[in-house]
Length: 206
Image (cartoon, rainbow, N blue to C red; front, top):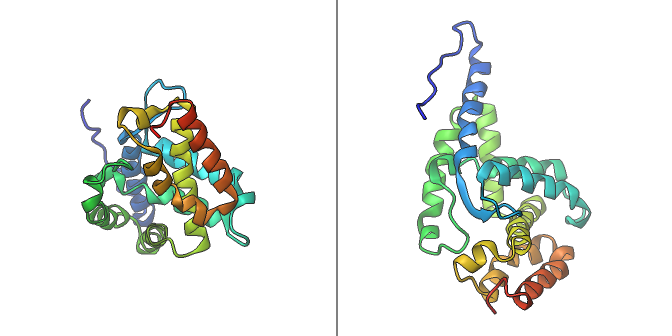
């Protein structure tokens, strides 16, 4: 498919044009394929679909967030944090080699992509991205917890999904899900139940 060529009208306000330029660029997130199958197993999801789904999950599971956490802030963080994958690509959770340079790739992507925006919004989105990555606030810890829970749910509902195709073990999943225990401890019993049932059903290697 040829790349779409366009120009905004010359009369477009610069501040508006920069936001529209960013939205056009953000559309590319729909083309970044992840390793997680859709829950019906029909195809792999893309990163834009994941961003929407995880933000929705954070809202619906807000009763299990740390007390006082600002859920609207969490949702903004979750909608912003995967945008860097337009340039950096999605790094599979269990690709330990690929994770070695993940931060460097994503840092460069954040500088370019957020730099398309007016300075105030560029600073806001970058701050959200950094906050998620550092995981120091209650909102960031909860956001990270939900970001780990959704792939777990995908693999469980898809009868093993990428777990089976990549030979993932229970110990590896437990290590990856540790963010849930720390960021949304009220969801930890459910997390353990899903993992143990996945092993019992043959979806996950013991």
